[in-house]
Image (cartoon, rainbow, N blue to C red; front, side, top):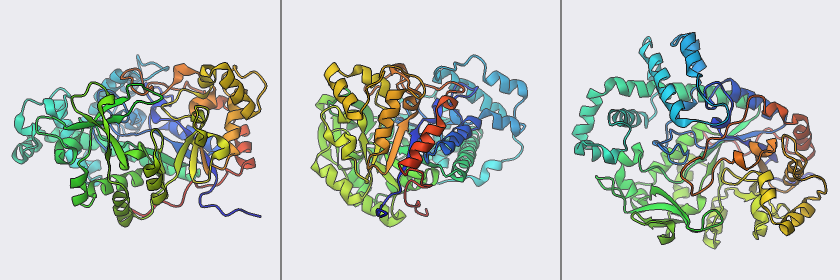
Length: 509
């Protein structure tokens, strides 16, 4: 008897683009990305989950970007510029000099990439990028030109008061004065989206869907806040009434003080949630499936006074709730969405998730921290299961962190009595845990690449609440080839996760 299923059973791998090996100090949208897609296809995986690929700010966190729509210039493959005959072979070789293969040195990579891209732009014959003209591009290109003119300072620190306040006359004058820099920024975005389109099409040809992350908030230093500050409760001088964050939890006893401005939900509602509709529309054009980060913020968000020293001073404040998603569905149709329903979840959040029909998340590690909902035997079809997220320590490191009694219970649960402490690609304990997730009822299982490789705590992607040292991990050349693709292909087949789609077709937008 064949069971009726709303979602096909499938699996995927979580790997941010920056983690890929390349000669350029950071993962790029080129050869290595396509080779990773080849691995996914060979191993029977049908989803590649990435973190946000929007342009990062000074913290280089993919969750604090200067635009909610644009693409990160550092991810552009420099080899494509050589193929376009816009740079010389020596310039291409110089682009890769002095960069670490072990981690992303964002400061150096950004500097070298900027110099490289500007050389290419200076030699461009004509304007092939003119056909690329999304609604957000003009404002973004101007904002980045103004940031460049003002030593990359955020808008609220610019010396020109008229530009700080987005005065229409000052904005028009800046467009005339900074025409070449504006055109350069448009050229860069055209490059990014051309390379992204090729990668997405390549993945589709191998039955691999791309899952993209949408941060709940935008950065205080962003074109959206500068140009529409009334939507974010921001004054002309950059003063915010409140900022977002999270209450004290497992990751941080003082909570998390993110610093992002909170939304003016009343005004957004009056405008018919157009800003959100356009943001989601753009995401659906970029990804096959969207993961809504911090989904509980749509029901209630942790509102912290702007002058607070820690997130402890915040309080729960009602968000937009179901009217937002009704407006989005009316405009865009059914949404292929994964909702991050983690953290402090109450009945109201659970009801909102049920009303939207989105799949929630389950994280194996949380199941052994007194949250039985995250134990694999409780997984249902309407969830996406992870060994850990980008905020968790890798699976092998977590095993070492467990107390003796908890570790014994975990090993008994997974039925493992071998050497659990040996790491590296295809380590036995990780394969046992991954097998446990694969046989669960979760419709989609996603494994961080660190867990496929059996890596330890030094490869952790992010430690929530810590401002430095995150997002820098990279895999070495040849690392993915050490993963036993045949084992995962068999595991996908035997657990019936070899379907060629991870969700219903995306809506036409």
